[in-house]
Image (tube, helix red, strand yellow):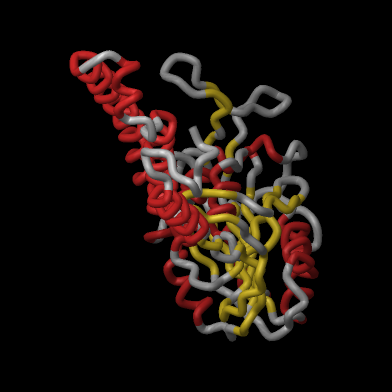
Amino acid sequence: MNTFRFEHMEYLWLLAVIPALAGLYVIISFMKKRNMKDFGESLLLKRLMPDFSSFRYHFKFVLMLVAAVLIIFALAGPQFGSKLVDVRQKGLEIIIALDVSNSMLAEDIKPNRLERAKQELSRLMDRLENDRVGLIVFAGEAYTQIPITSDILSAKMFLSGINTDMVSRQGTAIGAAIELAIKSFTQDQEVGRAIIVISDGENHEGDVMEACRKADERNISIFTIGMGQGQGVRIPVSSGPYNKDYLRDQDGNFVVSEINEKMLLQIASAGNGKYYRASTPGMGLNDIISQLKKLEQAETTSQVYAEYEEQFPYFIWTALFILVLDLFILERRNKWLNKLK
């Protein structure tokens, strides 16, 4: 993909001087022409100065303006072109599986379970160095939100847009999320790999332990973070001081969400990881980072855009050519450039 940009856009403000110089030139030329009329008649002046060329006089000023514009462009740092290059870097591969079922809207963790998880994950991504991250969302089904990448900024952008409407089928398919994460890692067997499951563990479905066994066979560690407090809480479906309501079952009773820590503990144990409850400082992500650093880090190849190529020499050389040309164009006619008026 080829694009053009200026590295130092602030220098382009100098272009505002160009029309000001042009206006000043017009005023000076007008005043000069008026003074010449006071000096004598135009026919007489032409006879006294037969070699003078008003065209060349104006043309030289235009050349000077063009040279000034080119120099300003050069100062602004014109850059053109970019290409993908392979970069070798040492790091880990981490896939985050985030529960987006309706129970994650419970407000026993402020502002709610899902939003708190997103906030802490964003802070986690800021601390990743040369690591690659992927993002999976799940409820009754699991979907890849962003494939594994070293582009942390893009990962954070996708993370900010996650909500409970992304998966229509309700449930907590942790097993499906883990299996999808396993398939999402690269084929590099040397790099340290980990899955971070963030969920309340409620209404889990599928063979979770079988998914953990597959991860263990591939030397993939699984860490779990339990979202929720010990007691059950209702799930809000609308907000506001006057119209707040909560999720109800078919009989009209309030649905109560309660964290399933036993299941999350089993998953972490089977996946050679650790379990953390979200009530701990930073949701345990600081401890997870410490654990991740103990994993083997291998060199991986990532494709990134190379630096833009500097184009300012073209502008400088063109400006110099114009300035040299201006030296050879005199205000009076000569035998070398007699075709110019």
